[in-house]
Length: 79
Image (spheres, rainbow, N blue to C red):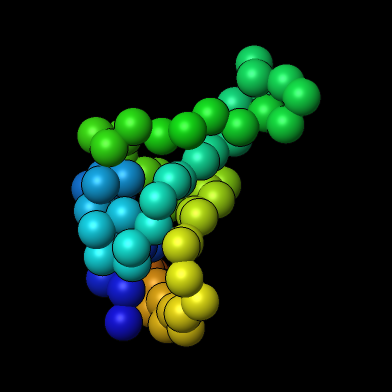
Protein backbone atom coordinates (compact mmCIF):
# COMPACT_ATOMS: atom_id res chain seq x y z
CA UNK A 1 0.00 0.00 0.00
CA UNK A 2 1.24 3.48 -0.82
CA UNK A 3 1.35 5.46 2.40
CA UNK A 4 3.25 8.49 1.12
CA UNK A 5 0.71 9.41 -1.53
CA UNK A 6 -1.22 12.58 -0.71
CA UNK A 7 -4.63 12.16 0.79
CA UNK A 8 -5.94 14.34 3.54
CA UNK A 9 -2.39 14.47 4.90
CA UNK A 10 -0.48 17.31 3.24
CA UNK A 11 2.97 16.69 4.70
CA UNK A 12 4.32 14.34 2.02
CA UNK A 13 7.02 15.68 -0.24
CA UNK A 14 7.69 14.68 -3.83
CA UNK A 15 10.79 12.84 -2.54
CA UNK A 16 8.61 10.77 -0.16
CA UNK A 17 6.37 9.63 -3.00
CA UNK A 18 9.25 9.04 -5.41
CA UNK A 19 11.09 6.90 -2.87
CA UNK A 20 8.09 4.80 -1.92
CA UNK A 21 6.82 3.99 -5.41
CA UNK A 22 10.03 4.25 -7.43
CA UNK A 23 8.85 7.21 -9.52
CA UNK A 24 11.38 9.10 -11.58
CA UNK A 25 9.37 12.30 -11.88
CA UNK A 26 6.35 14.04 -10.37
CA UNK A 27 4.60 16.87 -12.18
CA UNK A 28 1.76 19.20 -11.31
CA UNK A 29 -0.43 21.79 -12.97
CA UNK A 30 1.10 25.19 -13.72
CA UNK A 31 -1.04 27.54 -15.78
CA UNK A 32 1.98 29.73 -16.55
CA UNK A 33 3.86 26.88 -18.30
CA UNK A 34 2.28 26.35 -21.72
CA UNK A 35 1.80 24.37 -23.86
CA UNK A 36 1.12 21.50 -21.42
CA UNK A 37 0.74 23.58 -18.23
CA UNK A 38 2.96 21.25 -16.20
CA UNK A 39 5.84 21.87 -13.85
CA UNK A 40 8.26 19.27 -12.52
CA UNK A 41 8.12 19.17 -8.74
CA UNK A 42 11.42 19.38 -6.88
CA UNK A 43 12.10 16.81 -4.17
CA UNK A 44 11.14 19.22 -1.37
CA UNK A 45 7.77 20.18 -2.92
CA UNK A 46 4.94 19.33 -0.49
CA UNK A 47 2.20 17.61 -2.44
CA UNK A 48 -1.22 19.00 -1.66
CA UNK A 49 -4.30 16.78 -1.74
CA UNK A 50 -6.12 19.40 -3.84
CA UNK A 51 -3.62 19.71 -6.70
CA UNK A 52 -3.52 17.49 -9.73
CA UNK A 53 -0.41 15.32 -9.77
CA UNK A 54 1.20 13.23 -12.51
CA UNK A 55 3.57 10.49 -11.38
CA UNK A 56 5.96 8.81 -13.82
CA UNK A 57 6.94 5.27 -12.89
CA UNK A 58 9.82 3.42 -14.50
CA UNK A 59 8.32 -0.05 -14.39
CA UNK A 60 4.96 -1.74 -14.56
CA UNK A 61 3.43 -2.09 -11.10
CA UNK A 62 0.11 -2.27 -9.30
CA UNK A 63 -0.72 0.56 -6.91
CA UNK A 64 -3.18 0.34 -4.05
CA UNK A 65 -3.96 3.85 -2.84
CA UNK A 66 -5.98 4.16 0.35
CA UNK A 67 -7.31 7.65 1.01
CA UNK A 68 -9.31 7.80 4.19
CA UNK A 69 -12.30 10.12 4.05
CA UNK A 70 -12.53 12.75 6.76
CA UNK A 71 -15.01 12.13 9.56
CA UNK A 72 -17.60 14.87 9.75
CA UNK A 73 -19.37 15.57 12.99
CA UNK A 74 -22.76 17.22 13.15
CA UNK A 75 -23.14 19.27 16.32
CA UNK A 76 -26.56 19.92 17.75
CA UNK A 77 -27.18 23.67 17.78
CA UNK A 78 -29.06 25.23 20.68
CA UNK A 79 -29.02 22.30 23.10
